[in-house]
Image (cartoon, rainbow, N blue to C red):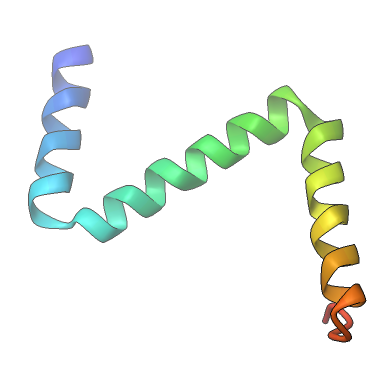
Amino acid sequence: MAVAAIALLAYGIAFQPSKTIAVIGTLACWSLVLAFPGVALGVLALGVVIQWWQGRPPV
């Protein structure tokens, strides 16, 4: 199964790199949210505060 996963990853990087990187990034973000929900919410709240500070209230 590991060989198949590596083969699919190599195929994705070779033929559709932007979609492959987007999927890997999404999976990494979800794993961080599941492992450390407090930190993830803190980072999200920090982003909202920074936007609000710059005069662009979050939509």
